[in-house]
Image (cartoon, rainbow, N blue to C red; front, top):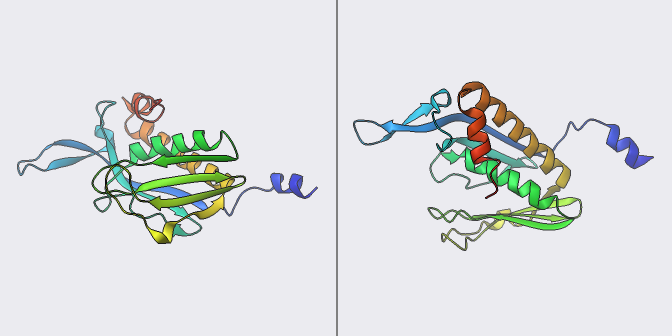
Length: 181
């Protein structure tokens, strides 16, 4: 009865939260040579990159080094990577997914599933020279919480994208997040 009862209780204390804010699209160059940060409503093509701030919190701790510049995370790429992580980790109780972008000294992000647990590490990059973070070595949370947090993020991000960039929002999603690789 214990397990059946637990399944009926709504999840109100999820330990994984993925949030985003201040979404923007890299726009035309300004007079000073800097790229303009266009609003999401100005998204004109499915190949554009969507940036902004992104936070992944596990057990109240913020996963570090998602961005190279403050509040400048490629949110679209992280949406793809988190969706890919879910797909890989759902294949079995002992599975692993690594996101190693190899860009600008970023570390690798390792997601390992061991049964009902997810272990998250910030590891040394094999591609870009980014270093590990010893404070983020195999930080654990329930896998179901990771699933719930990522699914909520993907649903919210997609809804905002389609609402604000309605002309190309769904095409952007299909091209960038639901791609195979």
